Length: 563
Image (cartoon, rainbow, N blue to C red; front, side, top):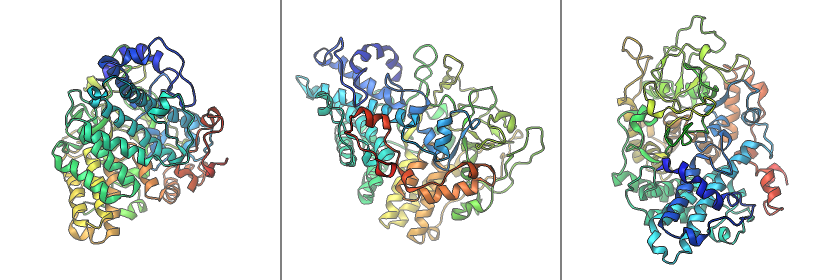
């Protein structure tokens, strides 16, 4: 599906070029709604709405607007910015919590999400104005699903300080709408309509299905704290049989898992579509380093994230995981002697973080510092990202940009089936069904236990991998079960763009992040001195000052960030 985008964008620009930023007005283009009110026109606009999932449009693009939310991990405890401290200075300031309302990363992400929302609105408005809207029911449901997705992202990033623009507002060219009201009810209406009107299956991989809408509605209810409703919706997906865990955990990030039974809703990146792979992951282009002289050394896992994979008796260390560090080679050159960690580890660690002495996506054994761009005086540490980096030999996922950068074809999952199981486990804990929560968590752990481990050159395990299942006594109280479920989300979903929003919705972000800054400074001594204290205001992004200015005062700033 996505490979068609490149060829239709010139047609769409005349219609959409000025409508994507909510504060601007639409100019008269060469095409009008009457010319597009047919199946081809509706599908063209719908493809454009899907196209914005990766953050790239005529209103935005690049790593600041990236659809995979990788830099959101940088302002959580999963990842460091990477590279040297002066490279992408704005992201350095975001990581060190020196935020300002005019930061370009925030403005780019805001514009990208509203570009997507307004492209969805364009489809909805076109269908509603057609002579026979009923012939486009499927396309309308897809457009409302996409609008729900874009507004969900805006809600979890800006909360009530994001504004809602309806398809009626879009038609009336009334983009400067006031903020101050949560978007949840509108989001739920869109996902509810989508689940009732989308088909169970689609001919094109990547198009929204009814199951995806049900899962996303369940996720929305979970974020709102409506745990009973969330559990019912998520279990509808679990019991529906449309999805399952891949046999191999690592295949979620490899060619074998692309479009597989675990993928519920994803950005379908592709290295096809023309010169320089325009449909590859342009937002993640900075996030390569290591064996091939790739650019640019960003998105490095933290010591904190690696530490959570320590086990005892096959189970996580829970609150004690940061009392000891997994052995690392921070401050060592590749020529310096180093023996990797020998203690027991969850095997998912080496599908998540590239550690010295361990095979790195079949490219070679990671030699340490010579593959890491960050210097010893920078704040990004010794680890390499893995999930976003394609494996050696999987040529179909390798694409290059016009200056040699990587436009990867590795898909990004907004929701995969393991996430649904863990969200259902969380909802079960909060509704006091600890037995059910135990079962769902153990499904995820069983897959990890059965998966192929990373191997050494002699075919043996590359590390001391040890993972087991929880027993009923481990979930003997709601607090214990809650801790286990939250830990499992991080173990399973680390470096996948979820951690920041988990911390925010659990109400623990400032405390967790300030503890993380202190602990991380054992490995990176200057990290703490360079980083400001995390405060309550950091639980939501400030409204970009440019958006407020363009709205002529209609938008109001989050009061924690000033007037």
